[in-house]
Length: 335
Image (cartoon, rainbow, N blue to C red):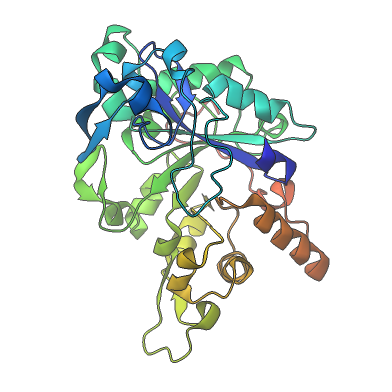
């Protein structure tokens, strides 16, 4: 709710499932580091491999919604504000939607289907004869989310559905007109549902062209949008960086670029020798011409947009930045 108050156009929810198949908002199914789950459910601590990574702790898929609601959240990063630890429960997808719909202005939602192939492999999901994608989509349908980008229906209740996987986005593209966003990790990271292939394969000219047949946008790691200039003598505030060409390929194929994640701390700015978050924003929004971005510090990005509006007379907000009409995708000509 704080992010809505300070000016977020969209709010994000990483969606995972409970044991009784209720979608809730958490960065990972593993909740040991971000809640008091280990203390409350020590008998459920176990190790599982998800998308090639070994995780140990308590997982939402072993807890009913009632049990998840007994957990209290905590900040896992030691250098961030710890004063809210223990005060809040994990929200459900529907509670998150209620925050957006309860705002005094239009606020969009941006849910991510987290590890959909892994979720779909679980006996609890197979027994229900459903998929994670369908569970999430049914909740969005229930609350009236529909339509391609900038359609009347979408403008009333904006939404994007994002995923690091390719298969579930292609599946969703045949079932909904809600715009989809293909998330991209680093160049050499394997695609979770296509582990024989790295993300670099779908960042190529042909890969981005194929992406545009099912997605309306791309959510790249911001580092993949830039590369070091050869022989650069000056590096301050991004002077040593240039476009990798990915942003241009995304735009050429009619999609939007919404990179992640912009953060204020100096350790996240050092890669481009940026003096401040404002300098990083300037590089990405002015030089690369981004349409949107994920940030942990909404107030800073909103302050930057306000400053640019005064400086250039441009309105930097959802209505002005997201200005490309929705296009029917070949997978779903009904859109």
